[in-house]
Length: 334
Image 1 (cartoon, rainbow, N blue to C red):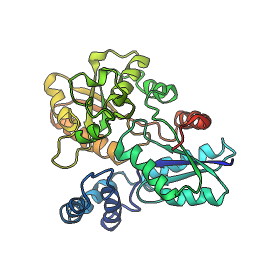
Image 2 (image 1 turned 120 degrees about the horizontal axis):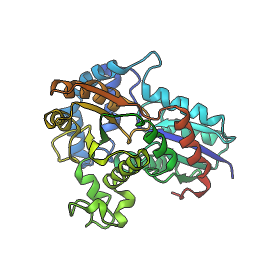
Image 3 (image 1 turned 60 degrees about the vertical axis):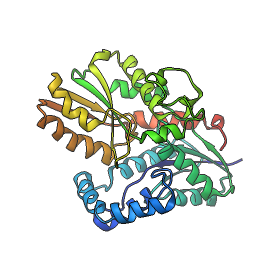
């Protein structure tokens, strides 16, 4: 059986302009795994409430982070795929869930190369239906059983992922905020196989349950604990928050923006932010945290602020993915 690898991430618009953002946002937000509403409601929300204004606003944000290499996320993912291809005899392709290069193009390239088993590696350490779940569903639909499919398990506690993040905090003396991408609370309940555990109690993430296999919040908390332990950090100097809230529904708390506003009043004037949910730096880390987050914190009375880079295409990032891929024969079948 000839095997091939497909790396997936969320994606970026083709350019930092309104037209490109309109195409990208429509594809992204119309995904029922992202905006989990009945189609008529989702269509009305996206086309009548969001698309008239959001593309222009998002274009301004993307212009803040766009480089000579284009989108930072696409650049880092492309470099990772190239680096990994030199380490494997099997073909390695890159595909974005939304935008280009698309995961459908990646699938076709692998099939054209004679692959009859695709090993899918969504570059999301934690399980969430809006990211990991959406990637798997999209690939299964596009693949149409033309090849066998294996999927990497969430790697939120893998040592090759935890260790370099912990090492990136060596010498950091500031208060450290672990900021994860947020989710609507209803997503946690939807992916709870027991339908009775997630968010049912204040300590649900610390209470053993089958729900933890697909609980984004639990997995984020476990990642935080692991990094703190490996880095040997004082727990009282660390905090957790959730960013990128969209819409009026209740999302996971505490919110990063509100936390950044509050910390200086608590005497925390020097801050470092790390974003372990993101394998590569992107709009959410570079613009939302490093630019807007810093402005929020400093305007609230902060004295210093810095963002800890993601693994990106660093040797540690390549080593992490290479280690996961080397174990592909043991990934579960989808």
